[in-house]
Image (cartoon, rainbow over all chains, first blue to last red; front, top):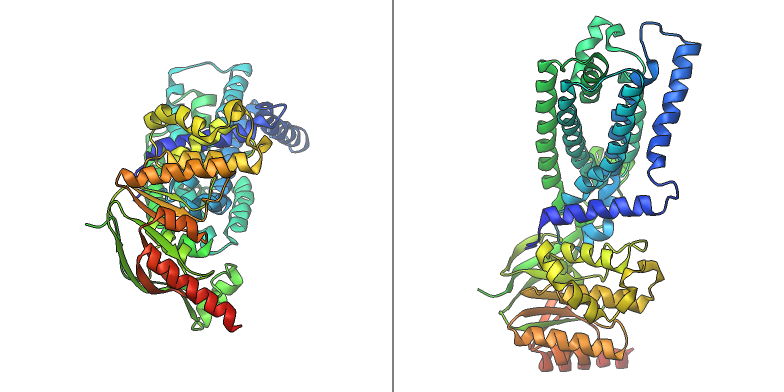
Length: 254
Length: 247
């Protein structure tokens, strides 16, 4: 049996990813900011000049509230999905708890996320927002997203070992998600018959919470928070269960 | 309780299990074809007591590595039962998880934690590991600047300093130069004096004779012979020479 310290291994693998990613970039963390800023600029141009939408004030901050969680979600999900195959040499040759691999892959995107959150908060303040007590909800909401992606990645990472096409399904799902999650439109314009479907989507719920906290300065709805926490932690449990069921035959399939 | 015990262990792989694309998966679901089984190990039983050192010999494809992978828990046996008593460190491939852009020290820490050392143990043994590897001030240079020999010395140095109860070595003793090899040998022999258990796969029969008191001989997944190293190695040598003479 392997009798090491799983948390210490997890920490080491996350640190390893950080170092590799940021050591070879001359602009370093600036790259983390550049992508959302460019996207924000493009979307702001399209939706204030080409298709003007006068109902939304401060469109750039509004769209950034959607972009930051979406970016993290899609990036963390895809790296989590491919992580087990990407780390084949670890999975096949080192007898450690294999769950660590996809979770480390998801968590290693968190530095990236943290930088983007700073950018988002800076944008909120620049457009006239104020720090208020509701901001205390932010870490809670982000925690739910991270937990949710961990669970989802454990499932798709397992599937990806058995069916190599899974990563392309995940990539397509991410593309679709960009349109069906209210990133550049608001919840209010969603027709009533679809709104219950939207509420089931944790990424959409997250964006809803963020906009309430950052733009309106009010606490997120309790029912949404409850649903979000339930879905996130159930997804994590399901993820561990699926991974546990699948991991014993990884050796034969990698 | 023996340190390692295999009871009637078999391991089979399905042929063509490498087809991982959706197309094959669906085709298989619709029209399941009985796929041929390939036995990597067939009904293998043996036990290694604490303090013993077991050599595993046999030709290519005999099932030696599969056996070690099952012992470390990397794959599960298809049939039979495996019991392990103690902390295992496996040297199946030196430098698993090493990354060329990280420094020697960073790689050392990651590798040590993967092999099962805690944070405190890594801190305590860090200097000893660097000292044993003989890398000196290069420890803070990126791994891509190392020679192959240096990388291997670092990897081996981490593994032997993990201080496990059971050490599993797969064909990795031949790293580094003469003097480093002597150092490794010395360390592994020290292991045995400390009453630890070793499982060792190698084609270097003289090394095995030096390291191990017990041996098993595998051929095409079956256990041919088990007993004291001297006797098994002699029998194996005769059989291999007989094969060469026959062709």
